[in-house]
Image (spheres, rainbow, N blue to C red):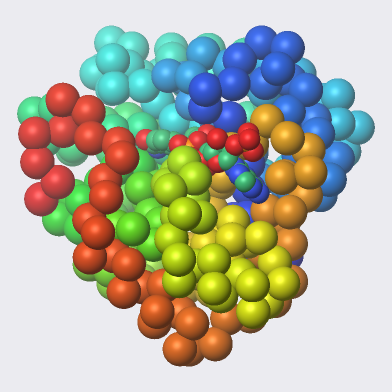
Length: 267
Ligand SMILES: NC(=O)c1ccc[n+]([C@@H]2O[C@H](COP(=O)([O-])OP(=O)(O)OC[C@H]3O[C@@H](n4cnc5c(N)ncnc54)[C@H](OP(=O)(O)O)[C@@H]3O)[C@@H](O)[C@H]2O)c1
């Protein structure tokens, strides 16, 4: 499996899984070979995710675990305690700790400083951000002295994120694609289905291949063991330049699925 800045190219998203189902799905994802698990304080499933990793029987060091600090915990009074709570709930230090969303006032300096401190205190092995615009990525990476490795954003063929990708590459950050299948909408596209038929693979694998072939990691969520196994197979083949361009052209749909009210602007 390719790794980008140490992050396995294909992973497993855990929202909105919870409880026993989250535990079962995480264990199944690891059993079929996935080695990158994504959770967040906001998902309320960190305990279950930690149990799922243990239940898989795979060594902890062989799994790349990501969690994220909730927007309500970005202030000085709560940041460190919330991260300690995540570590306790997960039962382990995460490989990557992200700021889940930039604060609604857009002032990222305090939260980024607190993120760096959490790293220095051994509460995470690597650090990054999520939902940061190119401008905020630039500011955050400057504050961090180049230490951030990742920005996790909505990324799939139906949304043009080329400006995000260019900035991330320039700054030495890797993008991780959330909602990489656009929750199934990408697989409904005729051109994706035609390319899938040519490769004799499911449309979902074509979409994930398009993502990872650009050096972007992807964290699809699935409740089905066979779909988790299929997602991993996106690492097994290559799309032609022409196929990549055909899929990229779908970006003019401008379909942004995740746009919460607190994100007043994506600039
Ligand atoms: N940082 C953030 O702000 C943020 C925001 C949103 C999401 N996320 C993360 O990103 C993860 C993934 O995003 P998402 O769940 O929104 O969207 P997604 O992964 O694009 O779509 C999930 C849907 O795709 C289906 N699916 C998965 N693999 C499939 C396959 N091989 N064939 C057919 N269908 C398949 C699943 O159905 P089945 O169960 O039937 O397979 C599920 O309904 C989340 O779980 C979360 O960890 C992060």
